[in-house]
Length: 454
Image 1 (cartoon, one colour):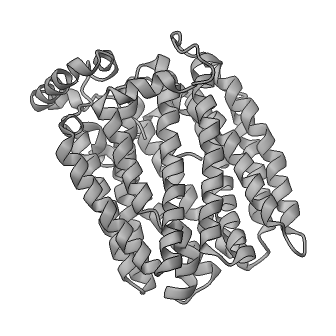
Image 2: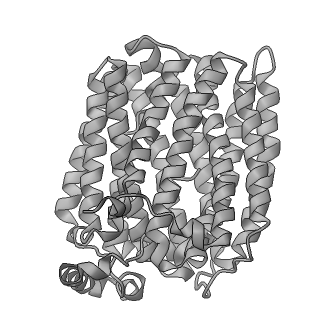
Protein backbone atom coordinates (compact mmCIF):
# COMPACT_ATOMS: atom_id res chain seq x y z
CA UNK A 1 0.00 0.00 0.00
CA UNK A 2 1.38 3.41 -1.00
CA UNK A 3 1.96 6.11 1.60
CA UNK A 4 -0.55 8.37 -0.13
CA UNK A 5 -3.26 5.77 0.45
CA UNK A 6 -2.68 5.92 4.22
CA UNK A 7 -2.77 9.70 4.69
CA UNK A 8 -6.11 11.24 5.69
CA UNK A 9 -8.22 12.53 2.78
CA UNK A 10 -8.98 16.28 3.01
CA UNK A 11 -10.88 16.63 -0.29
CA UNK A 12 -14.24 17.39 1.41
CA UNK A 13 -12.72 20.56 2.90
CA UNK A 14 -11.38 21.63 -0.50
CA UNK A 15 -14.52 20.84 -2.49
CA UNK A 16 -17.43 21.89 -0.25
CA UNK A 17 -17.77 25.44 1.08
CA UNK A 18 -20.71 24.45 3.29
CA UNK A 19 -18.82 21.56 4.82
CA UNK A 20 -15.88 23.88 5.58
CA UNK A 21 -18.21 26.12 7.60
CA UNK A 22 -19.78 23.16 9.39
CA UNK A 23 -16.31 21.76 10.10
CA UNK A 24 -15.09 25.10 11.47
CA UNK A 25 -18.06 25.50 13.80
CA UNK A 26 -17.78 21.91 14.92
CA UNK A 27 -14.12 22.33 15.93
CA UNK A 28 -14.94 25.34 18.11
CA UNK A 29 -17.84 23.50 19.69
CA UNK A 30 -15.85 20.33 20.36
CA UNK A 31 -12.89 22.04 22.00
CA UNK A 32 -15.11 24.00 24.37
CA UNK A 33 -17.15 20.88 25.15
CA UNK A 34 -14.02 18.85 25.88
CA UNK A 35 -12.80 21.43 28.36
CA UNK A 36 -16.18 21.59 30.09
CA UNK A 37 -16.73 17.83 30.22
CA UNK A 38 -13.35 17.33 31.87
CA UNK A 39 -13.88 20.24 34.25
CA UNK A 40 -17.35 19.04 35.27
CA UNK A 41 -16.06 15.50 35.90
CA UNK A 42 -13.29 16.84 38.13
CA UNK A 43 -15.61 19.27 39.92
CA UNK A 44 -18.20 16.60 40.70
CA UNK A 45 -15.49 14.36 42.17
CA UNK A 46 -13.91 17.28 44.06
CA UNK A 47 -17.23 18.33 45.62
CA UNK A 48 -18.56 14.84 46.38
CA UNK A 49 -15.39 12.76 46.78
CA UNK A 50 -17.25 9.82 45.21
CA UNK A 51 -16.57 7.85 42.02
CA UNK A 52 -20.20 6.74 42.12
CA UNK A 53 -21.31 10.38 41.97
CA UNK A 54 -19.16 10.87 38.88
CA UNK A 55 -20.83 7.88 37.26
CA UNK A 56 -24.32 9.03 38.22
CA UNK A 57 -23.62 12.48 36.82
CA UNK A 58 -22.66 10.85 33.53
CA UNK A 59 -25.89 8.83 33.54
CA UNK A 60 -28.04 11.92 34.17
CA UNK A 61 -26.33 13.82 31.36
CA UNK A 62 -26.70 10.88 29.03
CA UNK A 63 -30.41 10.51 29.82
CA UNK A 64 -30.78 14.16 28.84
CA UNK A 65 -28.76 13.53 25.68
CA UNK A 66 -30.88 10.52 24.71
CA UNK A 67 -34.06 12.50 25.34
CA UNK A 68 -32.80 15.18 22.98
CA UNK A 69 -31.76 12.59 20.40
CA UNK A 70 -35.21 11.01 20.36
CA UNK A 71 -36.76 14.24 19.16
CA UNK A 72 -33.66 15.54 17.37
CA UNK A 73 -33.85 12.63 14.93
CA UNK A 74 -37.43 13.49 14.02
CA UNK A 75 -36.50 17.17 13.62
CA UNK A 76 -33.66 16.21 11.28
CA UNK A 77 -36.06 14.23 9.06
CA UNK A 78 -38.83 16.88 9.02
CA UNK A 79 -37.29 20.35 9.45
CA UNK A 80 -34.55 22.29 7.67
CA UNK A 81 -31.40 20.95 9.30
CA UNK A 82 -29.62 24.31 9.19
CA UNK A 83 -32.38 25.94 11.26
CA UNK A 84 -32.21 23.17 13.82
CA UNK A 85 -28.43 23.57 14.21
CA UNK A 86 -28.74 27.33 14.69
CA UNK A 87 -31.51 27.26 17.30
CA UNK A 88 -30.60 24.37 19.59
CA UNK A 89 -27.06 25.55 20.38
CA UNK A 90 -27.92 29.09 21.49
CA UNK A 91 -29.10 28.10 25.03
CA UNK A 92 -25.71 26.48 25.58
CA UNK A 93 -24.11 29.91 25.84
CA UNK A 94 -26.21 30.81 28.87
CA UNK A 95 -25.67 27.40 30.48
CA UNK A 96 -21.89 27.68 30.10
CA UNK A 97 -22.00 31.13 31.73
CA UNK A 98 -24.05 29.64 34.59
CA UNK A 99 -21.39 26.96 35.16
CA UNK A 100 -18.68 29.61 35.16
CA UNK A 101 -20.53 31.76 37.70
CA UNK A 102 -21.17 28.74 39.95
CA UNK A 103 -17.49 27.82 39.92
CA UNK A 104 -16.59 31.26 41.30
CA UNK A 105 -18.59 30.66 44.50
CA UNK A 106 -16.78 29.74 47.70
CA UNK A 107 -18.84 26.54 47.79
CA UNK A 108 -19.92 25.64 44.23
CA UNK A 109 -23.27 23.87 44.00
CA UNK A 110 -23.13 20.23 42.90
CA UNK A 111 -26.77 20.50 41.78
CA UNK A 112 -25.91 23.36 39.40
CA UNK A 113 -23.02 21.41 37.85
CA UNK A 114 -25.17 18.34 37.30
CA UNK A 115 -28.28 20.15 36.05
CA UNK A 116 -26.46 22.57 33.73
CA UNK A 117 -24.39 19.73 32.27
CA UNK A 118 -27.58 17.76 31.65
CA UNK A 119 -29.29 20.68 29.89
CA UNK A 120 -26.25 21.20 27.66
CA UNK A 121 -26.44 17.54 26.69
CA UNK A 122 -30.17 17.88 26.00
CA UNK A 123 -29.57 20.64 23.46
CA UNK A 124 -26.67 18.69 21.97
CA UNK A 125 -28.99 15.73 21.47
CA UNK A 126 -31.53 17.88 19.66
CA UNK A 127 -28.91 19.12 17.20
CA UNK A 128 -26.56 16.18 16.63
CA UNK A 129 -28.79 14.16 14.23
CA UNK A 130 -29.20 17.19 11.95
CA UNK A 131 -25.43 17.68 11.85
CA UNK A 132 -24.80 14.07 10.83
CA UNK A 133 -27.79 13.66 8.51
CA UNK A 134 -26.84 16.77 6.53
CA UNK A 135 -23.32 15.61 5.65
CA UNK A 136 -24.14 13.40 2.61
CA UNK A 137 -25.92 16.32 0.91
CA UNK A 138 -22.96 18.62 1.59
CA UNK A 139 -20.14 16.41 0.31
CA UNK A 140 -21.70 13.64 -1.79
CA UNK A 141 -21.74 9.91 -1.14
CA UNK A 142 -18.24 9.33 -2.51
CA UNK A 143 -16.66 11.54 0.19
CA UNK A 144 -18.35 10.05 3.25
CA UNK A 145 -15.33 7.98 4.28
CA UNK A 146 -13.10 11.05 4.11
CA UNK A 147 -15.59 13.05 6.18
CA UNK A 148 -15.66 10.25 8.72
CA UNK A 149 -11.90 10.40 9.13
CA UNK A 150 -11.88 14.22 9.29
CA UNK A 151 -14.60 14.21 11.92
CA UNK A 152 -12.77 11.49 13.81
CA UNK A 153 -9.42 13.24 13.87
CA UNK A 154 -10.88 16.60 14.91
CA UNK A 155 -13.04 15.04 17.60
CA UNK A 156 -10.12 13.13 19.04
CA UNK A 157 -7.71 16.04 18.71
CA UNK A 158 -10.10 18.24 20.66
CA UNK A 159 -10.67 15.51 23.24
CA UNK A 160 -6.93 14.99 23.54
CA UNK A 161 -6.01 18.67 23.88
CA UNK A 162 -9.16 19.59 25.82
CA UNK A 163 -8.61 17.35 28.87
CA UNK A 164 -4.88 18.10 28.96
CA UNK A 165 -5.52 21.84 28.79
CA UNK A 166 -8.35 21.50 31.32
CA UNK A 167 -6.03 19.75 33.77
CA UNK A 168 -3.51 22.57 33.49
CA UNK A 169 -6.22 25.23 33.82
CA UNK A 170 -7.76 23.56 36.88
CA UNK A 171 -4.35 23.38 38.54
CA UNK A 172 -3.53 26.97 37.45
CA UNK A 173 -5.92 29.90 36.88
CA UNK A 174 -8.99 27.87 37.79
CA UNK A 175 -11.87 25.83 36.50
CA UNK A 176 -13.90 28.90 35.47
CA UNK A 177 -11.78 29.33 32.32
CA UNK A 178 -12.93 25.93 31.06
CA UNK A 179 -16.56 26.97 31.23
CA UNK A 180 -15.91 30.35 29.59
CA UNK A 181 -14.20 28.54 26.71
CA UNK A 182 -17.33 26.44 26.25
CA UNK A 183 -19.46 29.59 25.89
CA UNK A 184 -17.06 30.84 23.21
CA UNK A 185 -17.31 27.49 21.42
CA UNK A 186 -21.10 27.77 21.24
CA UNK A 187 -20.77 31.26 19.73
CA UNK A 188 -18.30 30.03 17.08
CA UNK A 189 -20.60 27.17 16.06
CA UNK A 190 -23.72 29.33 15.80
CA UNK A 191 -21.81 31.91 13.76
CA UNK A 192 -20.44 29.34 11.32
CA UNK A 193 -23.84 27.73 10.67
CA UNK A 194 -25.20 31.11 9.52
CA UNK A 195 -23.09 30.80 6.35
CA UNK A 196 -24.32 27.30 5.40
CA UNK A 197 -27.05 27.01 2.78
CA UNK A 198 -30.49 25.71 3.83
CA UNK A 199 -30.58 21.92 4.26
CA UNK A 200 -34.15 20.63 3.99
CA UNK A 201 -34.57 16.86 4.53
CA UNK A 202 -35.07 14.61 1.51
CA UNK A 203 -38.15 12.38 1.25
CA UNK A 204 -41.24 12.15 3.45
CA UNK A 205 -41.44 10.36 6.79
CA UNK A 206 -44.07 7.66 7.28
CA UNK A 207 -43.97 7.95 11.09
CA UNK A 208 -47.02 10.00 12.18
CA UNK A 209 -47.01 9.00 15.86
CA UNK A 210 -45.50 11.91 17.75
CA UNK A 211 -45.47 9.80 20.92
CA UNK A 212 -43.08 7.29 19.32
CA UNK A 213 -40.51 9.52 17.58
CA UNK A 214 -38.03 6.74 16.78
CA UNK A 215 -40.48 3.94 15.97
CA UNK A 216 -39.80 3.77 12.25
CA UNK A 217 -36.02 4.10 12.63
CA UNK A 218 -35.95 1.42 15.34
CA UNK A 219 -38.04 -0.91 13.18
CA UNK A 220 -35.67 -0.42 10.26
CA UNK A 221 -32.59 -1.15 12.37
CA UNK A 222 -34.23 -4.22 13.96
CA UNK A 223 -34.68 -5.92 10.58
CA UNK A 224 -31.23 -5.03 9.25
CA UNK A 225 -28.57 -7.29 10.74
CA UNK A 226 -25.70 -5.06 9.64
CA UNK A 227 -27.04 -1.95 11.40
CA UNK A 228 -28.12 -3.95 14.45
CA UNK A 229 -24.62 -5.45 14.68
CA UNK A 230 -22.99 -2.02 14.40
CA UNK A 231 -25.04 -0.70 17.32
CA UNK A 232 -24.65 -3.81 19.49
CA UNK A 233 -20.87 -4.15 19.18
CA UNK A 234 -20.34 -0.52 20.13
CA UNK A 235 -22.77 -0.77 23.05
CA UNK A 236 -20.95 -3.83 24.37
CA UNK A 237 -17.56 -2.12 24.23
CA UNK A 238 -18.80 1.02 25.92
CA UNK A 239 -20.92 -0.71 28.57
CA UNK A 240 -18.17 -3.04 29.78
CA UNK A 241 -14.93 -1.26 28.89
CA UNK A 242 -15.52 2.47 29.43
CA UNK A 243 -13.44 3.38 32.53
CA UNK A 244 -13.24 7.17 32.11
CA UNK A 245 -15.25 7.73 35.28
CA UNK A 246 -12.45 6.01 37.20
CA UNK A 247 -9.69 8.26 35.83
CA UNK A 248 -9.72 10.70 38.79
CA UNK A 249 -9.45 7.85 41.30
CA UNK A 250 -6.84 5.96 39.26
CA UNK A 251 -4.79 9.13 38.78
CA UNK A 252 -4.60 9.79 42.53
CA UNK A 253 -4.69 6.30 44.06
CA UNK A 254 -3.08 3.86 41.61
CA UNK A 255 -0.62 6.12 39.79
CA UNK A 256 -0.04 8.65 42.57
CA UNK A 257 -0.70 11.87 40.67
CA UNK A 258 -3.20 14.72 40.68
CA UNK A 259 -5.11 16.93 38.26
CA UNK A 260 -2.33 16.93 35.66
CA UNK A 261 -2.10 13.12 35.68
CA UNK A 262 -5.88 12.94 35.37
CA UNK A 263 -5.71 15.24 32.35
CA UNK A 264 -3.06 13.04 30.71
CA UNK A 265 -5.11 9.88 31.23
CA UNK A 266 -8.19 11.55 29.79
CA UNK A 267 -6.19 12.81 26.80
CA UNK A 268 -4.34 9.57 25.94
CA UNK A 269 -7.19 7.82 24.05
CA UNK A 270 -7.55 10.93 21.90
CA UNK A 271 -3.85 10.86 21.04
CA UNK A 272 -4.11 7.26 19.87
CA UNK A 273 -7.24 8.07 17.90
CA UNK A 274 -5.44 10.91 16.12
CA UNK A 275 -2.74 8.48 14.98
CA UNK A 276 -5.45 6.11 13.78
CA UNK A 277 -7.30 8.87 11.92
CA UNK A 278 -4.14 10.31 10.35
CA UNK A 279 -3.41 6.91 8.79
CA UNK A 280 -7.02 6.10 7.92
CA UNK A 281 -6.85 6.45 4.13
CA UNK A 282 -7.12 2.67 3.77
CA UNK A 283 -10.55 2.51 5.44
CA UNK A 284 -12.34 3.44 2.20
CA UNK A 285 -10.86 0.44 0.45
CA UNK A 286 -11.41 -2.44 2.87
CA UNK A 287 -13.48 -5.26 1.35
CA UNK A 288 -14.81 -6.44 4.73
CA UNK A 289 -15.44 -3.34 6.90
CA UNK A 290 -17.55 -5.39 9.32
CA UNK A 291 -14.63 -7.68 10.08
CA UNK A 292 -12.42 -4.65 10.72
CA UNK A 293 -15.05 -3.24 13.11
CA UNK A 294 -15.02 -6.51 15.06
CA UNK A 295 -11.21 -6.64 15.16
CA UNK A 296 -10.88 -2.98 16.19
CA UNK A 297 -13.37 -3.53 19.02
CA UNK A 298 -11.25 -6.41 20.25
CA UNK A 299 -8.16 -4.16 20.22
CA UNK A 300 -10.03 -1.59 22.33
CA UNK A 301 -11.08 -4.18 24.91
CA UNK A 302 -7.65 -5.84 25.15
CA UNK A 303 -5.94 -2.46 25.59
CA UNK A 304 -8.37 -1.55 28.40
CA UNK A 305 -7.42 -4.80 30.16
CA UNK A 306 -3.74 -3.82 29.87
CA UNK A 307 -4.49 -0.37 31.26
CA UNK A 308 -6.22 -1.87 34.27
CA UNK A 309 -3.27 -4.15 35.04
CA UNK A 310 -0.56 -1.46 35.18
CA UNK A 311 0.36 1.16 37.77
CA UNK A 312 2.97 2.79 35.54
CA UNK A 313 1.92 6.12 34.01
CA UNK A 314 3.85 5.61 30.72
CA UNK A 315 2.34 2.13 30.23
CA UNK A 316 -1.11 3.39 31.19
CA UNK A 317 -0.85 6.12 28.56
CA UNK A 318 0.39 3.62 25.96
CA UNK A 319 -2.52 1.23 26.54
CA UNK A 320 -5.05 4.07 26.47
CA UNK A 321 -3.57 5.39 23.22
CA UNK A 322 -3.84 1.91 21.66
CA UNK A 323 -7.46 1.72 22.83
CA UNK A 324 -8.17 5.10 21.26
CA UNK A 325 -6.69 4.04 17.91
CA UNK A 326 -8.80 0.90 17.83
CA UNK A 327 -11.95 2.82 18.74
CA UNK A 328 -11.34 5.45 16.04
CA UNK A 329 -11.02 2.87 13.25
CA UNK A 330 -14.11 1.09 14.54
CA UNK A 331 -16.03 4.38 14.71
CA UNK A 332 -15.15 5.44 11.17
CA UNK A 333 -16.32 2.14 9.69
CA UNK A 334 -19.36 1.80 11.95
CA UNK A 335 -20.52 5.22 10.83
CA UNK A 336 -19.72 4.38 7.20
CA UNK A 337 -21.87 1.26 7.37
CA UNK A 338 -24.67 3.17 9.09
CA UNK A 339 -24.72 5.90 6.42
CA UNK A 340 -24.34 3.37 3.61
CA UNK A 341 -27.21 1.13 4.72
CA UNK A 342 -29.69 3.92 5.70
CA UNK A 343 -31.88 5.87 3.23
CA UNK A 344 -31.97 9.66 3.63
CA UNK A 345 -35.63 9.75 4.74
CA UNK A 346 -34.65 7.74 7.86
CA UNK A 347 -31.11 9.02 8.35
CA UNK A 348 -32.01 11.45 11.14
CA UNK A 349 -33.77 8.83 13.26
CA UNK A 350 -31.28 6.03 12.62
CA UNK A 351 -28.49 8.48 13.46
CA UNK A 352 -30.38 9.31 16.66
CA UNK A 353 -30.38 5.65 17.66
CA UNK A 354 -26.67 5.36 16.93
CA UNK A 355 -25.80 8.51 18.86
CA UNK A 356 -28.14 7.54 21.70
CA UNK A 357 -26.33 4.27 22.30
CA UNK A 358 -22.95 5.93 21.68
CA UNK A 359 -23.66 8.39 24.51
CA UNK A 360 -25.81 6.41 26.90
CA UNK A 361 -23.78 3.18 26.83
CA UNK A 362 -20.56 4.94 27.99
CA UNK A 363 -22.52 6.60 30.79
CA UNK A 364 -23.90 3.26 31.92
CA UNK A 365 -20.39 1.87 31.55
CA UNK A 366 -19.00 4.58 33.80
CA UNK A 367 -21.74 3.92 36.35
CA UNK A 368 -21.05 0.18 36.20
CA UNK A 369 -17.31 0.80 36.56
CA UNK A 370 -17.87 3.14 39.51
CA UNK A 371 -20.16 0.68 41.27
CA UNK A 372 -17.73 -2.24 40.83
CA UNK A 373 -14.85 -0.05 42.02
CA UNK A 374 -16.85 0.95 45.09
CA UNK A 375 -17.20 -2.70 46.14
CA UNK A 376 -13.85 -4.04 44.91
CA UNK A 377 -11.19 -1.76 43.40
CA UNK A 378 -10.74 0.50 40.39
CA UNK A 379 -8.26 -1.92 38.80
CA UNK A 380 -10.62 -4.87 39.23
CA UNK A 381 -13.42 -2.87 37.63
CA UNK A 382 -11.32 -1.95 34.58
CA UNK A 383 -9.89 -5.43 33.97
CA UNK A 384 -13.17 -7.30 34.39
CA UNK A 385 -14.97 -4.88 32.09
CA UNK A 386 -12.31 -5.20 29.39
CA UNK A 387 -12.53 -8.99 29.46
CA UNK A 388 -16.32 -8.89 29.13
CA UNK A 389 -16.08 -6.50 26.15
CA UNK A 390 -13.50 -8.73 24.49
CA UNK A 391 -15.76 -11.74 24.85
CA UNK A 392 -18.72 -9.76 23.54
CA UNK A 393 -16.90 -8.78 20.34
CA UNK A 394 -15.87 -12.38 19.67
CA UNK A 395 -19.41 -13.64 20.28
CA UNK A 396 -21.06 -11.06 18.03
CA UNK A 397 -18.63 -11.82 15.23
CA UNK A 398 -19.48 -15.49 15.51
CA UNK A 399 -23.28 -15.12 15.44
CA UNK A 400 -23.68 -12.25 12.93
CA UNK A 401 -22.43 -13.30 9.46
CA UNK A 402 -24.22 -10.33 7.85
CA UNK A 403 -21.96 -7.92 9.74
CA UNK A 404 -18.87 -9.95 8.85
CA UNK A 405 -19.81 -9.87 5.14
CA UNK A 406 -21.12 -6.28 4.99
CA UNK A 407 -19.90 -4.22 2.03
CA UNK A 408 -19.41 -0.57 1.18
CA UNK A 409 -19.38 -1.29 -2.56
CA UNK A 410 -21.46 0.94 -4.88
CA UNK A 411 -25.00 -0.29 -5.51
CA UNK A 412 -25.36 -1.89 -2.09
CA UNK A 413 -26.54 -0.54 1.25
CA UNK A 414 -29.50 1.85 1.32
CA UNK A 415 -30.66 0.82 -2.16
CA UNK A 416 -31.21 -2.75 -1.01
CA UNK A 417 -31.48 -2.49 2.80
CA UNK A 418 -35.21 -1.73 2.80
CA UNK A 419 -35.92 -5.05 1.16
CA UNK A 420 -36.62 -6.46 4.64
CA UNK A 421 -35.53 -9.47 6.65
CA UNK A 422 -36.41 -11.96 3.93
CA UNK A 423 -33.68 -10.55 1.72
CA UNK A 424 -30.98 -9.76 4.30
CA UNK A 425 -29.03 -12.95 3.66
CA UNK A 426 -29.26 -12.54 -0.11
CA UNK A 427 -28.15 -8.90 0.05
CA UNK A 428 -25.10 -9.57 2.19
CA UNK A 429 -24.15 -12.57 0.07
CA UNK A 430 -24.36 -10.43 -3.03
CA UNK A 431 -22.33 -7.72 -1.29
CA UNK A 432 -19.65 -10.22 -0.38
CA UNK A 433 -19.40 -11.49 -3.97
CA UNK A 434 -19.10 -7.95 -5.33
CA UNK A 435 -16.36 -7.00 -2.90
CA UNK A 436 -14.37 -10.12 -3.69
CA UNK A 437 -14.38 -9.38 -7.45
CA UNK A 438 -14.41 -5.57 -7.50
CA UNK A 439 -11.69 -4.21 -5.24
CA UNK A 440 -11.16 -1.35 -7.67
CA UNK A 441 -14.77 -0.25 -7.18
CA UNK A 442 -14.42 -0.44 -3.41
CA UNK A 443 -11.89 2.39 -3.53
CA UNK A 444 -14.75 4.63 -4.67
CA UNK A 445 -17.21 3.41 -2.02
CA UNK A 446 -19.04 5.65 0.40
CA UNK A 447 -18.41 5.66 4.12
CA UNK A 448 -18.58 7.96 7.34
CA UNK A 449 -17.61 8.21 11.30
CA UNK A 450 -19.46 12.45 16.37
CA UNK A 451 -18.59 10.10 18.45
CA UNK A 452 -20.09 10.92 19.47
CA UNK A 453 -20.21 14.36 19.00
CA UNK A 454 -21.77 15.21 22.23
